[in-house]
Image 1: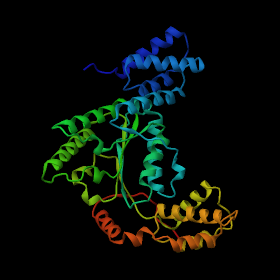
Image 2 (image 1 turned 90 degrees about the vertical axis):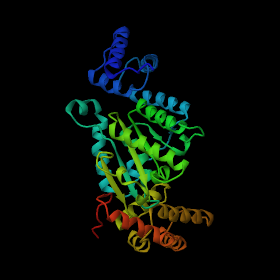
Image 3 (image 1 turned 135 degrees about the horizontal axis):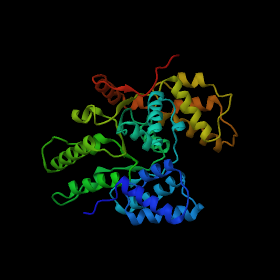
Image 4 (image 1 turned 60 degrees about the horizontal axis):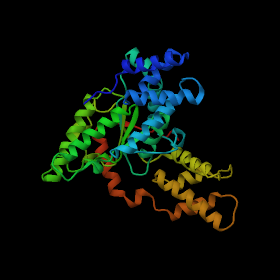
Length: 361
């Protein structure tokens, strides 16, 4: 097993290329793109440097995007991880101010990773987002990758399960190694309680899942790379307690059903996205009528109203039409009442940060 170039070896390759091409590059830019090259071999690094040079006759900070695009190709070829293409940004999240503020702080570290490491800052490990279905957990994972300007890869544990003894464990090892090689990246594990369901149970299938879970825990504890983990979960009661202890994640956040101010922001985001927002829409009336609605419910209300307006040949949407759609939509609070109270009871028993700021009104 021939190891991939270390950071110091990558710096040597870049400096040799710069000398050969007789170009001047700022040392800070060299240090930053050297970190982006981690996980590539010498031939691949030289290829990308040639591409960058041919593109503009120089090497600069913008070439980090070119490196990331090349890395995406390696992920697609491997089949172990799924590259997620998206356009969501942190501005698409209505509310969750505490969570967004925390991510913006971490973004400052990722934007200046080389300086941060030299200063003595620990590389951020990741976050776990627990909470109600349809309240923006998956959206946050996508927005995090956009904010950090790094690729988003999804780990699907079901995809790693093999039919032969030891095959699943080998696939997990390969997937985690690949995530390290393409780092910095965001590794997203959606609905992690389902991915590792059956941990600690009896039976062949559960034994495999338990071993995969143990393997993943050890990797999380010992990793010293720039893989930022975003794990999302609905039902925390099904997650083994050792997974939630300090050191695995930088922070645990609980996403509750949106409060009044957050519901207003979510409605505005979806109306503006579809070009149907106007000043005459009465936000106060809508907030009062949508208590217990999650983000997905509110999006459904907007989509339904716009569709009706289009069919009826109207140019704009009124508050009355939105209120009618609210009456026609069954909120998550009514359809999953018992499940929601169960999630809240479990969360109250552990120390976990709230993703939202309190509703002051």
